Length: 350
Image (cartoon, rainbow, N blue to C red; front, side, top):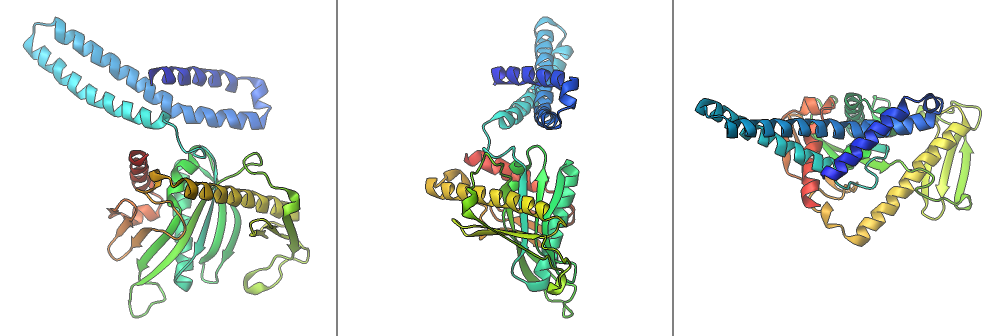
């Protein structure tokens, strides 16, 4: 690990120098790539520097303990060695987790899809609540969100929304959110006060680039049509909406939110690539029967991964049998206590 950390520290210094060069600032793509890598390495280097400082303190405390004849000073040094050794062990574990081989798509941006499932209007309202939860989580992480496609209901609910989340380690964290999310609460429209159960599905796709998945234009059928608003009325006199069908897999994506047909087409292709990449990886996982997914589930949409119980102020993640009584905080984007435990379970099963 020490050799690996030295290599990363060397790369970190190289990145600092490159980011200070004028030619890098004039190349936006290069600047974004280097900045992203620099941000990813910052956490590692800070932990490494902290480890080096603690190791030095331990050595100094050991030296004092060996050289002094003062019993009180010896006791102080012994206690300091004990406390610092615990800190050193923890930081080494954290560094090992950070630099260990990760999911091949862990550093990718993601495309998330939230859909109302069982429960009618209440399910659509729950889907809107999940969107708000992920938006707040992204704000906490300073991640960027871009809405790609959305279909709303008359009562401020969401039938379906597709959005991109971009920054460092996005997929590494959000991949644990894929699956069926269940809510148990009294809907605002329920006069008798009965608790209803509704569900929404969440898909988390690694955002695919052209190099990740090859698509032959001959395998695509592209249709254009007028975008429509609520109730199906036309809101555009020009055919700006785009529907792309991948004929080999019968995968269809439609985008109509942009006023430009070109923009809608670009977004549709972005979503299509990511869906095809996810499809390819799902097929690979099923074929290889990966044992590392047994503990936390495969994250398939058919799996009920989490229940949000409002009357009991409880959120339960069924994959690791974890219940937390901080529903309001979680719905406001405080997802790390859940995701950290899922990451820990994933690392143990790998």
